[in-house]
Image (cartoon, rainbow, N blue to C red):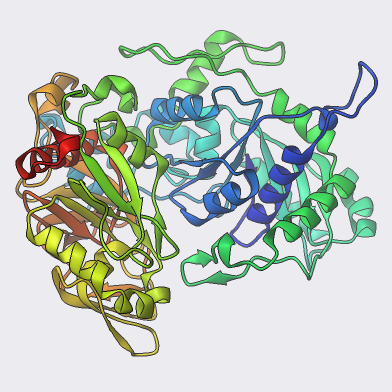
Length: 573
């Protein structure tokens, strides 16, 4: 894992440069003891947390998919299974951390109660006089055992953090530290960071934005192995906007910039040693289902098996918030999707410059439940694809392309007509903004959108409802249990209300956010209404993570299949 102490420290730049360097390595060593850096590596990238944009940079470098791993969305076993599936056949996995290495969320008691509601009576009545606020007091609701509490310092403050993710994978960490303007205080700052490395995962340090002479003067005093430095590179920067980095497609000469970063890494970073550290990670073996913890191949430097099992068992469970929809241990596997080969609904999903925020696992889960996914462009196409039975419009930057979306009235009419005809649809954040009547941009101009949703979205100048959320329909409408899904559920979770995990990250807001569901912010416990939903659609600002509630994806595909068969689509017959 490539981690740092804060955003803006150079994680994405270093990660992309490293990926680019590994991609271009050629087998040019001539001896048996050839250096690792000259051996070709099949590389896969991952991103810690819910970020959509950093994986786009990974894809721009590698030309292959990058996958999100999120310790809030997924429990430890689910994280390991997603990792194993994506990394199969690869030699090395590079995981880019999120924010600061220990930055997570403190889970509120209210969020724990909300999540557990309906699963078991033992979780009811945890709050006393409305005063319970801490994760320690919320242990009965969150199912946090003492080991987890102890490892997180008495509160679930690292829950969902990059460090918790690395712990779940037993993954070595390389710390990128922005040392610009630091002097000797750098040593004390790093000592403090490593003092909280409970599992001894931080194996090396790379200092960013310093001179070679300063690096040489301080390297022997670093509290972890010094792996090199990156000097100030004024000609290399990835600009940002209100939702984070700009997209790689917007960067002029991005490949040349990535080559410059790679060349610098090869000059001033010990790439051979970095790869040796990566190779020291324990091999992750296939897991055993039916409640058994996954196993790891032991190496000579690993702890005794019983100690290792104790370490692995309590990691990555985000305070014990298991999958409320009943998949054992939160497992994301093909067993959850009993497909009906007689009906293959085609779901069109928006994908272009304006709409491209999708989790790979969301799309894969729709496919596992039998859907065929086809792309379309609200910017460039004039109508929806033929013979489709469902519509998915993810997030993105519709505000940057509002004028073009306005001008493409033919596509807006096509989408509105499909929705009015009853075609099942899901829209998240930017997609939700697009379905409304108008979009008011930051400069005050108004643009016509699809008009399927009464209301308008406008720029507010500040983040709205930012952070992780848990969402539950007030009355089951869009998410409905099916007998074949219930058959895969375990324990009392089968009787639970369908609960979705997601996050909100937007500067725009609407005068009609809906009230079909209730959301609770994980960090504060604040509840609010959201989502416009009925039997055929689910629209709102939250970005959703479908594997947290497979019943959502199953319901969507089932509705699309039924609609296709009724409307006579050949692919759904």
